[in-house]
Length: 455
Image (tube, rainbow, N blue to C red; front, side, top):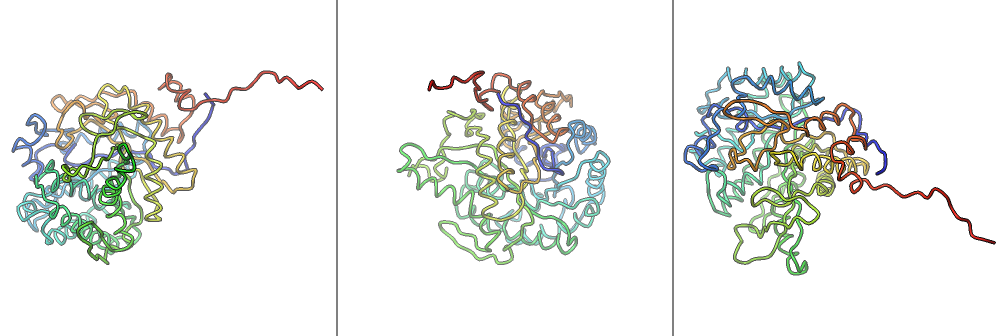
């Protein structure tokens, strides 16, 4: 194995990412609380206390992040807490989030705040959610109120998390609330989310002209089934629908789906940065019997790592390609706003982290402007429809929702060393994945002597 130090740029952000409903607990009046009450989560589980951040335990977890030499943290504001009824804003909830911002600054962590991360107030949901164009205006006013309350301590905003995941999981596959299965509604929701992003972008800029505003886009790596010639078209359909269309609209102002093209000129050039959320690679096969599944099929984990349940394969090398593609489509700086692996016994997380950061470092050395990396996640949390399924434990720290006990995993030590050094080194690789070190970074055999040819 070669000796090396993969040094990251000065000022690079090292952080973790969380989402309000997954860590706060306390059953806020939103669509996910209702979904849990309806028994639509793994084994009819409910979030309960989650990580008890609404009860104040965010402070001790921020302390843990600081101990890992993080200098940033991404979290979201829960809309239903701030505006539990139309037009009625809860100043105590806004103060809670202001206290979180202050707690981050006190520990040397810069906040990156997400304004919509999958959850809606019940009054929004009851009016049709994101199928209703009126939601755009409601969201814009909510964003204005949050920025007015928190903007003094926040300079980086993420308007919407994973718009195409939200649209497809809630309105095409029926896996998220409201559980719809309509391609038409999926397209309508994506369009309204695009308009909402644009409205939020302009609202933030009006209040904070120097703010850096972007969104987090989930990208999936794809490969065609065998034979590739047959299945390549299916791959292109999925790629354009899920990976490209929304991003393309942010630069051109035109949203193009197979069944609908719509002009949204206000969305043109509404990015100061773009976030990449990346987890899995999927094999795509063309199957006329599965149009609702967008032809996705689980990829066989050959050179990757198997994912949990019916997810795809964990293929960290895909980060490079998705970084390259997002930059080529937008021309904007990037943050890795989510990347991680579910791994309750921490057996594959160190390897996946090293492979992921190798890909990020390679992208930076190809002059792609990656500004930071936010690992998902700081602590085990309530993983949406998977609830507390043990196959979906993403945290650097384990967290028992009943006892609130935190347990540090070995990968947390690795991530802490990387942050402290602002680098990934050969020595770290040897210690944390000794059996993989030579394969990851093979050395070149050097002869001790050279035989010269005889004259």
